Length: 164
Ligand SMILES: CC(C)(COP(=O)(O)OP(=O)(O)OC[C@H]1O[C@@H](n2cnc3c(N)ncnc32)[C@H](O)[C@@H]1OP(=O)(O)O)[C@@H](O)C(=O)NCCC(=O)NCCS
Image 1 (cartoon, rainbow, N blue to C red):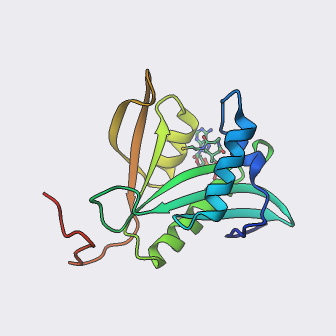
Image 2 (image 1 turned 90 degrees about the horizontal axis):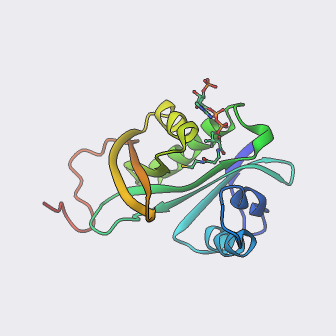
């Protein structure tokens, strides 16, 4: 297995589809794959076994207006048969290392409050609860914002200066 930044030609559709409950999951997955691999706002990473993607993660830099030097892991999935073998942990460490080198000091992730396995996973990776967003992804569906400081950065002031 090798974890690395992905190329436009990497196949990640099955992994993207594995997180979609939508009736039109195939179409939504195609749109997401296009964004993750072709839109410069995203950085895509995969754990590959030859040509096969066993795990996939996507990160967005500066996802929040007014925040400085923060990133968001917007997608993480390990294929079902490969779970609980530390692929997720290894991929998140790779993303954190990459993000730190890009000047990101803090990473966020949004997870469903009912996704207990994912919440446990993120706590294990050092992410803490920062907010509960009510009716966030859909009415009646709450999400947690979890965050982790990956790099201390002295007194640097970001693009917009500190907002108060
Ligand atoms: C969440 C997910 C990415 C974890 O990947 P993984 O490769 O199976 O996780 P790892 O093997 O690296 O687990 C690392 C640690 O996280 C914890 N963990 C992982 N999955 C867990 C689960 N289902 N329940 C409780 N703890 C879990 C364990 O403590 C584990 O360490 P240990 O094996 O030494 O005890 C994977 O289960 C997945 O793809 N889930 C579906 C998609 C999803 O929910 N993504 C997250 C969206 S925010």
